Image (cartoon, rainbow, N blue to C red):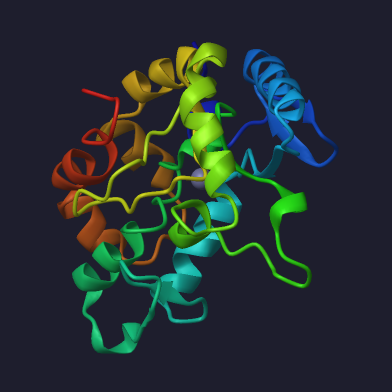
Length: 226
Ligand SMILES: [Zn+2]
C-alpha cells in the first residue's frame, strides 16, 4: 500500500535508485534487474529510458502541451496545431500520449519505458514512437522477446492497443504486483485533492469531465478491469 503522495508523484520515499539516474520501488527494481539479466542472456541490452517521474515534471509537460510550448502529436505521431482547439479538445489531444499531472503511472515507481541502445542506429535519437518497436522497427526483436518472457518477471504492457483513448505504447512496461494496487487506489477524488492549490491548465474542463476521463483513459486499459 502506498500513500496518496506516492501515488500522485509528490513523494519519493517508496523508491530506490536503479541503473544510475532512474528510480523504482524496490520490488519492481529487483524484478527489472532480473528481466534485464535474462534479456542480456538473450542478446539484448535492455535499459530504462524513463522510470519514476514526479508530479512537478508531469505538470510541466501537461501545461507546456496545453499552451503550445511543447509539441502535441496525433495518433500517427504527427504534430497537432493546438492553437485551433478549445480547452476540451486540447485535453483530449494531450491525453492520447500524456497523463494528467498526478495520474501518470510513472509516479508509482512500478512502471518504466524501455529500449535497447545497442539496437538504435548510429546517430538516431530515441523517439518513443510505436513504429520503432513494431514490425520493421529497430526494436522489433526486443518487443517480441519481451512479449514472450516479461510475464515471468511480473511485467506486462498496460498500453498495448489503441482503443481511442490512450495510445499504444509498446515501450511501456508495468510491474503488475505493485501496479495493480496503485490502480485500485487512484480515483477522481484522489486526483482532485492533489490538484488543490496547483496550477493545472484546462483544470475547469478536466474537473467537470473527470469521471469520463477515468473511464476512457485510466481504468479502460489493457490487462486492467477496474
Ligand atoms: Zn511510459
